[in-house]
Length: 543
Image (cartoon, rainbow, N blue to C red; front, top):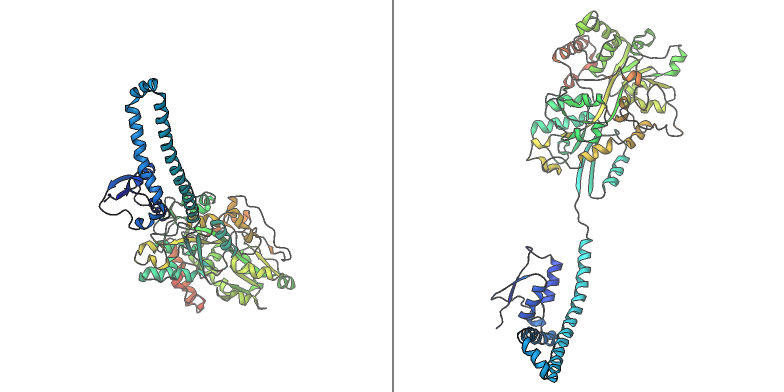
């Protein structure tokens, strides 16, 4: 019984189409012929007591003739070649004596060679057909598409960026990127979701904590860092989007572990929209009663506007408006040192403002502004601009002495603190690798148009302080021109220089603000009720 063959390949295993091709080519060949074939293809051979292919015996019958020819032809070749080499001297002697004998030998050798060539040619043709079939099968296998997708889950403030960004980003990244957006009605709900998840250590698949990127308001940034709700953005300074930001953005975003601005701190968030506190007034009412247009904070204390003003109920914004009207700053360090008369003067000015304001309520001040009794509204540009664009008799201004700035930021939840819960939202060992692509996309100059056209209220980050030149886009045709000193959704350059973000307050300043708020509550005006728990952050701002 002939010994079967074990075949070992230089690679650990054969791909299924290649293995099928290999087994097919072995079918019908005896052990010696297989050895020739395998040696030719670069495989190593060894003997074994097991059959190479149990089915090969059933497939040998049709190929018995070619197998027999190969069995006898191959030994004949080796024999003739060896004989020819060994008897070369004798052959040369015989050639001189017997030409007939030489001719007979050549004829015999030619016949043998022709038989081998015919058999080899037949096998080569069969191999060519098989090779062609194998190539087709391999090309078909290569053309298969695999369901490999990279997810990116975003929890964002509704209306803070154009819906077209989602479609555009998917087109840029291709079908293998799976974008999962979720929108919340206000920033407070996102922050509260993060805080609850961090406090309990448990969260489900819909929690903002398991998202790759979330929207967060600038006034919540310090608390989010201090409470470890978000994590630093790794490699941010090496990214092009960071390098394109103005120096003011870079200073504002760099914080230490306590959330305080620190030049040696890390980058914790990325801006994608910003705006400012504005004052809106009804032009028809001002014309009717011959009242001069509002230009600065001081104008809110005019006698003719008593009881005609509505305003947000954020402590930082209310106290900040008082401080700005007195020539100071939102982020004042020491009221007694910076303001003549100190804290007593501020209390008196604040009390006078209460008499001017009809309603302090971040949720309802715009509804009140729609009534006939309210002529002036003080609020965030993201709230007021959409209404002003629909009403031609409303003017909107950024106060000449400067105003507070706000920003919507992208941040990465600190989900890696909870390895057992991280997979709940699909995250594996950190946020999606598509995070930097999303941040880069949001800060491309092409994204500025919706903000400049007023489709989305607010301003584009790259227009801040003229960091990068962005082409101006005119308002959509048919849309009424807005009566405002705002430029591309933000204050003009000469006013922007006097504006400031609401930075974290030092403990001494925080205590002064709290005493001012407490004094207003004790006076019987309960419009600050329920918001002390949010201090010093801003009341929930919607999109």
